[in-house]
Each structure stands twice: as C-alpha cells, then as structure tokens.
Length: 84
Image (tube, rainbow, N blue to C red):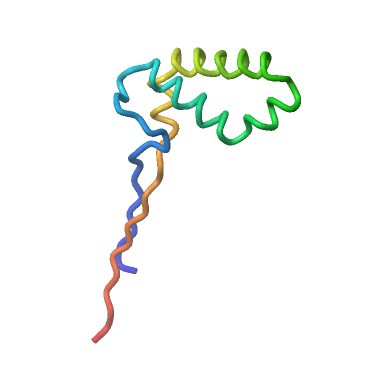
C-alpha cells in the first residue's frame, strides 16, 4: 500500500431533503423503530411506544444538523502498486 486515505461522507439515513430538520428527525426515528420497535412495543405497549418514537423524532429534528455531521460513513481508499 503506497497511500491510505480516510474520509467522511454520506449518511446512513435515507433523505430527500437533508436540510429539512423534520425529515431528519422522522428518518432517525424510523430507523430506530425498525431496529428495536418490536422490542419496545412488547415492553412498553403500543401507546407508550408511539409516544417514545415521537419524542425521538422531535429531539432529532431539534438537533438535525449536529446529527447529520455525526452520522456519516467513513470511507477508506488505498492506493496499491505491484512490483513488476
């Protein structure tokens, strides 16, 4: 390996409008619900679970810009050369 570069870019959240704080909040809450929603529903019940994920959505929307900066993929690019 001659050169190794690491850079950040791209979000794991699927967003049409990354500048829309409400969309960021909704996408994060939906991602959380996808991962653990069934467990949360089983422990809290449907009503409290809905309230919890609405609160996650609101809080994420309030911190949308900060969240998008922190929730980025890291990419690694290696430059190789082979001896002849």
